[in-house]
Length: 347
Image 1 (cartoon, helix red, strand yellow):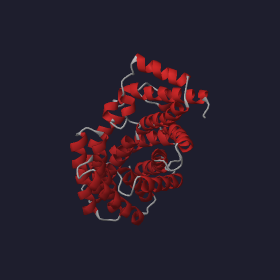
Image 2 (spheres, rainbow, N blue to C red; image 1 turned 30 degrees about the horizontal axis):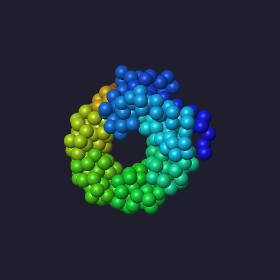
Image 3 (spheres, rainbow, N blue to C red; image 1 turned 90 degrees about the vertical axis):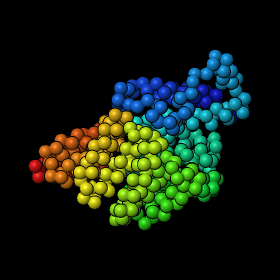
Image 4 (tube, one colour; image 1 turned 180 degrees about the vertical axis):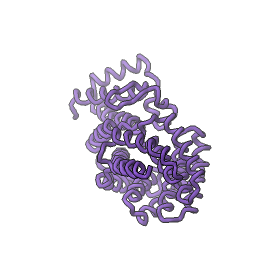
């Protein structure tokens, strides 16, 4: 039986973090500002943070269960601790607070492996979340075994056509895409699309996510017409599901702009980049990875249009943001530093 004090401490920490997410308090070490961040209603992935405060009677019963625990109640509570940690981690992850999110994900994973076992679906969820975070931080070698392990668990426990299996397929495919292994990524993306179309439907938001991932791979393989069609389909679905001003459709707008840029339609690309950036800035704030990425892309298309006077300050602004959020040695930071030098010399 786990130590009662340990359970109480973990519950306390998790509840405090969940309430911090719910009320969007300013957290100094994550540089979050409440007036530039969306409400939780904009992110329906976090229902645990949205639950109303329990009644006094329920709170009294819960307090008694904590102070006079049975083996069963400790087991239930031990399982709930990583769920709260995971929800809080997702909150900070979506807002670009990567250091805080990583601590929470790692703690949730350690508890789930110990309490639920190494092949439990919730353990796979923690593996997948941590892998996604590492991938976004550029730690591709660290993310790959986590993605593979999560996929193996979900295929074995949930089945080959479960939506969570599709999520792991998409995550691993995204990693392979980042590594340049397009041949390895494409069948995983196609399988994820097939699962989600069959299980969730043709116009589900998650189906659009898989279409978006497949489009990026197809684009990387040089099929720009095919990629454009997939991106346009993803945009249409996401705008219908989430609304025109939500950051999820803006992701597809940003990616569609990338295809238009490669096809030589710089005017169309600029228009989509500007719209995506405006949505991201309004919904997520300036230091979110999506906002930074769209700003960098906008600078790139301005450079290609020959408008170096406009491109250079945007590159410089994006570089400052990447250095602050990701650090000076991140691959994207280095890429932007090179772009600033190149544009400055040409100007």
